[in-house]
Each structure stands twice: as structure tokens, then as C-alpha cells.
Amino acid sequence: MKLRGYYGTFGGAFIPEVLVSTFEELIAAFETAKADPSFWGEYEHVMSTYSCRPTPITFAENLTRHFGGAQIHVKREDLNHTGAHKANNVMGQGLLVKRMGKSRVIAETGAGQHGVATATMAAKYGFECTIYMGETDVLRQRPNVFWMERLGAQVIPVTDGSKILKDAINEAFRDWVSNMDNTHYVLGTACGPHPYPEMVSWFQSIIGREARKQMLQQSGKLPTRVYACVGGGSNALGIFNGFMDDPVELVGAEAAGKGLHTGEHASRMASEDGSPGVAQGYKTYFLQNEDGQMKETHSVAAGLDYIGVSPILASLGDSGRVRFEAATDQEVIEALSLTLKMEGLIPALESAHAFALAFKEAPNLSKDDILLINQSGRGDKDIFTIADAFEDPHWKRFIQQKAEAYGA
Ligand SMILES: *Cc1c(COP(=O)(O)O)cnc(C)c1O
Image (cartoon, rainbow, N blue to C red; front, side, top):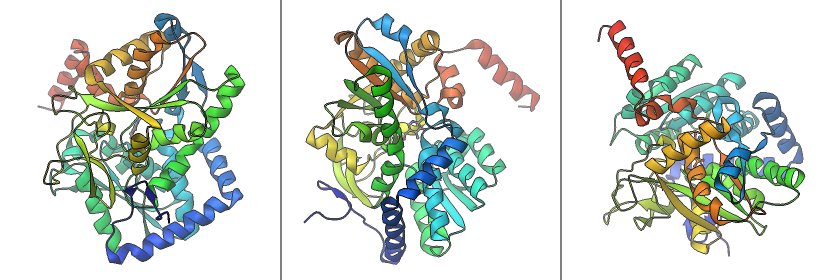
């Protein structure tokens, strides 16, 4: 018997008794929507009129010439409204919330990108919206907090634990327990208890469905390898889903931070540091110590800085269907710099991990090979981090002037 919501030994739904009926309601709504062809049509209509879908595939001609090996193509999820693939998930869940007749949404957010996307969806559909965010993140991600509040959401700083993403997730579940009747929890990635991993990757599969068709139309064949960065795993599963049954190699790019042997990274699959465990309602590879305490993670990309990984990817990693590699902060900044100058593309720091790996492998392949990189988001949001990494003196002066104007 295949247990519901399990992928090999990973996944499951470890939830408090009081939430069981709410999860059953969500599973039923999702199953009904999946079986109803008009639902996917409605979803595609929303995404094409509100979020620039289908997003194009761009041939990176200059980078291809520069590396002199495989052709490099880029799937442009950066062109979505709010700047990343996160729109695919939140708009899809928003349609389900309408079907379930609920009036309020809550979400967790780390760097704030998922919070902004959820607040945007709530504004469009007229839902009340509460976003849980670790207090540490509220302080360091003020631009996203500013937008969430302007979009009409209430942002609640979480002061438990280390005051970051995992603590915000726990607090969102606490809210849900008290407000199940009118509230839906919009989880931001393909993690958490069943049905979230399956549901989020189903909405994100719009990326891979488009990409497969576009590659055949534009190049007359499928890519040799597909690269995607892996935080929780939603953009990766989204594009991988289009090629799962094809002879296409799938490569997940994790954050090697300061290096896999420094302990300061966020690699659960490519490093030796991840181990199976149960936390936050599901079983997967976590970065934890022998007592099951979660470790601190590090990455230049806030969106890849998570202790767990999708149980679907954990299983695909163990079976060998997906190969996991990791790129260091330094490699990522170099890949970003090159992509900016040679193609005029501005990948998010998260997405630049996938670029860095593709750049490493492109020179060893032939001109007939095609590499497809998922550009999960745009890097405008990263201006503070990137300017620091480039040690731009004029940027520093600009920030100092601002501070002086405010009397600092
Ligand atoms: C949030 C985010 C990610 C990481 O999330 P996944 O669920 O792993 O896709 C990657 N890229 C961008 C641009 C993001 O905003």
C-alpha cells in the first residue's frame, strides 16, 4: 500500500489532532480542483492576465559563446508579477481559498518574498491577510515589510526561538488552530505536511509544462540538463515536473554558503550534514545535530536559507533521479556578475546558484547539448546584498547620506 502523502519514506502529515478536519477539507478541495479541467484553465487565465504567463525562454547567446560548450537557455520566471515563481503558488492557492469560501489568509515568510506575494494575492481577491515573520527578519528585510503593509497585510513579528523563518512557520500553525473556520494557511514552498508538497509543486508545474513545449518549438529537442536552485524546492519541482519522464538530467543547486566544509551553508542534500528527521509536520532531510536540534544555516541568498527540503526532492535525490550540487556565495556572485554584463539579465541571488552550476558544466559539453536554467526570480530585491558584495563605494556613500538625512 502506498501511504498518502509519502514519497519513499519521506513526507507524511504530522499535525495536531485539532487540524485534521481542516487538512481533510483542503485535501478534498485540492483533489476536486485537480480532477476538474476547468480549474487549470481558470488558473492559466489568471496567470496570463495578472502575471505575464507564459514566461519566455531566452537563448543566452553571449554566455554560450563565452563558455564554448553547451547552448545555455533561461526560463524567465523573473518576469512574473512580484518578481518570482512564488506568484504561481499563491495565485493557485488563492483560487482554492475562493472555492472553499474562506475570507482570510495567513502565511509565513523569511526574506519577505512569499509574504509580499501572498499580500498581493489577498489584495486582488479581497481576503484579510496576516503574515508571520521572525523579528530578526522584520528588522533586516524592511523594504518587503513596507510593501506587505502598503498592500494591506498585517505583519506580525515573531519573537520565539531564533526569530527567523522556522519560528514564523510554528506561529502561523498556532494561528490556524484558533481560526480554522475562516482561514487558509498559504504555505510558501513544497514542504510541510501533506498536501502542501504535492499541491505547491502542482501549481508550480506550470513552469515545466510551458518549458517542455517551448524547448521543442524553439530548439526542436529537449534540453540535456535542467538546473534549478533549491530552497524548499518549489521552483525546482515546478520546472523538473515537465521533464520527469524524459531522458533529461535534473540538477538541483543548493547553497554552499562559505563552503560545504565550513559548517556555514544550507545544503541538506549535496553535503554530508543533512539527516532524515521529522519536524514542522513532515519527514525529510534536515540540517540538525544528533539531538535533533536545528542548526544555523548560511547563504548569501535569503530564500535558500532553510533547514529542510521538499520530501519529494529528498526521495528523488535518494533514488538518483535528481542530482544535487552546491554553489558557494563567491561562485554565485561571480555568476551573477557575468550574467549581468553578458546578457543584461538580473537573476535573484537564489537563481544565480543554478547559473553558477550550469556555467561550471557547460564547457565540458558539446554544442549539441542544451542546458536550461530556471531563473526563479529577479535580483532587484537583492540590491543591498549585491552592492555590499561588490563593495561599491558610491552605494555606501548613498546609504550614509540617507542615514545622515534621518539624523543618524
Ligand atoms: C523563495 C525563492 C526561492 C526558493 O524557494 P523554492 O521553494 O526552493 O523555489 C528561489 N528563488 C527565488 C527568486 C525565491 O524568491
